[in-house]
Structure formats: structure tokens, C-alpha cells
Image 1 (cartoon, rainbow, N blue to C red):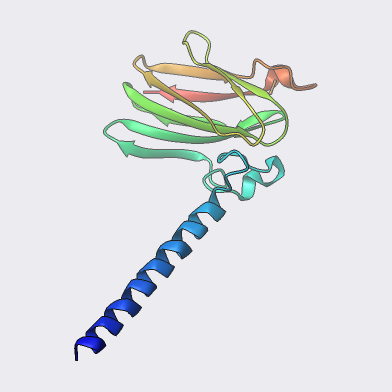
Image 2 (image 1 turned 90 degrees about the vertical axis):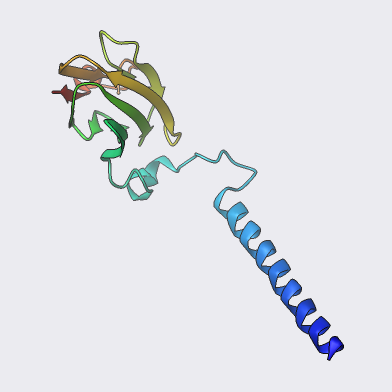
Length: 152
Ligand code: CUA
């Protein structure tokens, strides 16, 4: 009887051990240690979550996550609306070359690198229409590259 209990215990431990190895191998496969965890093939940005569905997502009390893509020559989404006082966590990548992300009149200013996930958080206290502009030369229509954030 005692032997039987030990055999069952041994087999259970083996199963637990193998599952731990399997799970960590799987997790490592998702984030290969050799590459940057956030690197996306720029050509596949449109197919890669969350960038396959750019847009605003409410994540808290007047707090949003804005998943965005930049490309020659525009941004997605091309317009967003939020309530005054909203905190927005921007998460943006580029589908081609280096673009900019600047909101004149605020301290929002970052580079958007192809395939990298670029983060920035800003609280929109004052109502109004905020332009997001590209401030990195990216080609012929660079100066027309923009999107709008409407704060109500
Ligand atoms: Cu994009 Cu300049």
C-alpha cells in the first residue's frame, strides 16, 4: 500500500515538473531572450495585437489606453475623443520609417520607431482640440501627417 502511494506521488511530481518546463519553454518562445521583447516586424504591425485594432480603450476611472499606429503619412485612429481630465496612456508603433509624435502646447513629444512599442502618458486637463503632429521628416507629405484628440 505504502509503495503504491509513493508511486502515485512520484508520478504526480513528474507531471508537475514537466508542466513547469513546458510552460516556461512556451513563455520563452513568446519572448525570445535574444531579441527585444517589443520588436514587431513593421510590415506585420497591422496583424499584430493590439495594433491590429488601433483605438481607445477605457482602463480606469477617466483613464484610457490609446493604441495607435504611425505610417507615411498619418496615424490611426485619425481622431479620438476623451473627457476633460482624462489620463491617456499612448502606445504607438510605426509601420514604416521613424515618425514623430508631438502635441504642440504640451510636453508630449516622442519618437515613433518602426516595430518598437513607444509609450507615453499624458493627462488632458483642458478641453479643446489637440493636434498630434509628426516632427520627424518622413517623406513628401510629412507636414500633413497628423491626428486629432478632442477633449470635451
Ligand atoms: Cu511622419 Cu513626418
